[in-house]
Every structure is written in structure tokens, then in C-alpha cells.
Amino acid sequence: MLIDNDPDPLRRIHRPELLPDLVSWAAARCDLGPVYHHRVCTVGYDDCNLLVETGTGRYVFKIFTIHRPEPLTTRYVEVIRTALAAGVRHPRLHPTAGEALLCHPPSGNRLIVMDHLDGGTFLDRDGHPNADQLADLMAQVGRIHRIQRDFAPVPDWWAVHEISALAREMLPLLPADDRIQVERAVASFAEVDRAVLPHALVHGDLTKANVLPTSPHRVAILDFAVANRCPRVHELAMVAVNLMHGDPRSLGERVDTLLGMYPAAPLTPAEQHALPRYVHATAAMELLGAAREWVLKGNRSDETRYLIRLGRAGLRAARRYVENDASSRRCR
Image (cartoon, rainbow, N blue to C red):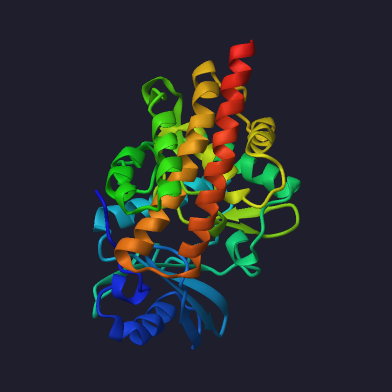
């Protein structure tokens, strides 16, 4: 299912004219003190996130998109609670009467309230994790992947396994060079048999926008909206392509670094074959998804511009990675 949220976060929610009332109401329900200021965060493509300052501190109010049905908002909160119980670092939720999921009666919007962690994400900082932060992230990835609880699957049209469908829609709209690069990635991913790959609960979107350094040695993880049971290599590919973008090492070297830190390594032979192709397809999906936002929805945000550049750079690097992997296998 492809959900087309509006580029304007305020148009993703019910009754945006009631936003000041919603903010005051939620702050009072969560006992956060008087509201001094709030502003809409422009990063992200799904929900409407508010940065709110009150008499007791700074918070994030995540107002769920009108396209996310109630069972999926409940699922979102349960995934976070399960991840926290497993030792994953996520901003503290602020429940009221024991319930983290709030519903604002006048507008009908559902939302959660959580701590705001100062310093910004790696996207805000235009950076990437250092060695200690990356090791901390991979330890948390291991905890997520060991979670045995089953959650109902959630649609994610930007996920790598949707590459064929998204490519069919977007290829005619891409410049010639982008089209050639994406076609190669689609062909490469077609060689992957997802059914034989070990699956786990994966976060699914460990991008710069969803990982936040809390110290020179630790990170916190945001936004579990598309956590699903997927091949484990899905997670590793996203970290290598997006979160580590800007790291001077080649994609192959980034992947090797991640595997050295991943608690579930070594990978199976099927995963070793699939991982370069997942990396290639992930880079293509960053370009395709952002290009769709740009071309079809007129989304000219800085994040969209950034992802288009990231996708193009990732495609060039991923092609070399896949070719080197294929050459190495032939020489064995």
C-alpha cells in the first residue's frame, strides 16, 4: 500500500487549526507544565512532529498521520515499548494514566509525547557515527533482531523489497543516467531469494534522520514506524548506505566494519550473496523514493534534495561493490 502523505506536515493531520489547543491539552495531560513555544519539524515524510518547550523541559509531540489507522498507531507504541524492554535506547515516553497513546477529542488526532534529546540527529549534524557510536548502534540492532514477539506487518512502500514496483512507476520520469543506474540495481536485486534469508524483527529505517548521538560513545534510535520481520541484511544495507554516508571508506569497507560489530555474525552463505545486492538496491530506493517526492508531489525539502544526492552517490559506489564481490567470488 502506497501512502501519499502531503509534503506539508500540517496537512497530514486532522484539524490543523486546532494545533495550539492540542499542544496545551497534551502538555496538561502529561503534566509537562505551561507551554512556552512549539514548532513543526520539517524532517520526515509520514507524521507531524512538533518540538515543544514547556515549563519542565523540551519534548517531541508525534502526531500520527491521518493515513495511519488506529491499529497501526497502537502497534507503533507497542513496538517502542518492546524495544525499550529489550535494552534499546529510545527517548522516554510520557504516558498519562498509564497510556502512551493519546487521542485529542476536539481534533481526533492521535499522538505520543516523548523527551526531546538535544544535539540533533546525524541528518541535522550532516555527519555519521564514529567507531564507538557505530558499535553501540550495532549492539542495539542485535537486541532488536533478537526480539521474538510477532507484530502484524506494516506496509512500507519505500522498503528495498518494493524496488520493482517503485522502479516501474519512476523509471520513465528519471534522467537517463539515473535510469540506467536504477535498472542495474533492479537487475542485481532480482538475483536475491529472500525466502532463504534469515529473518528478524528489524527497525527497517536506520537512517541519519532516525539515529541521534547522545554522547561521543552512544546513540539513541528513533521512529519504529516500519519495523517489520525482514531479512537481517535489510538492516545492515540501510546503515551502510544511508547512516554511514560521508564515511570516507568504500561501501565494502563499511559493510565489513558493520559485520565485525554485528552480534549475529557471521552471516550465512545466502546472506553473504544477498548483502551486496541489498546495498545496491537500497541506494536505488533512496533515489527512487526521494525522486518520487520531488517529481510527483512537489516536495522540495532539504531532506528530499539530500536523499537524491545520497542515492546517486550510493548507486555509483554500490555498483563497484557488487562488481568487486562478483569478481571475488569468481576467484575463489
